[in-house]
Length: 109
Image 1 (cartoon, rainbow, N blue to C red):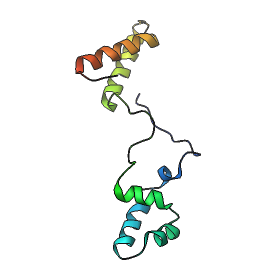
Image 2: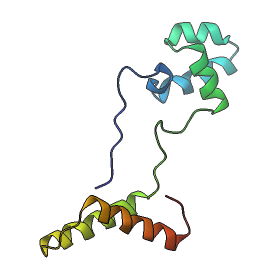
Image 3: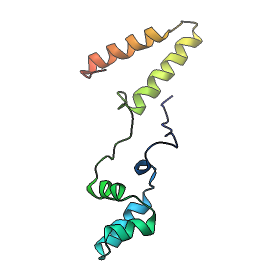
Image 4: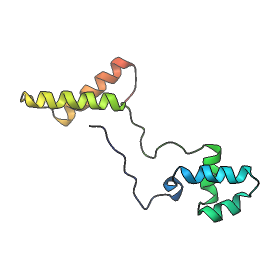
């Protein structure tokens, strides 16, 4: 199964801003309000607002994933099928399987 990322609650605040606040903030700024006033009204830090307006730091935190969701799901289904045939796959075997798959695709681990 594909992983579902769950952010720790004590991590940086700029990542915990929902999508509606930056859109509302950009609308307020284009109508003439200053960034500091908008941040005070919406409860967003200034650096968060600037990052959202410049579209920086928009990637998910943590290590980038190598496989797509479809590839992860396909590999998981194949592993379940082989386990039903009582063919054991250990962690090292799965790593080698994924490494050879990525090598054939021309991608790096």
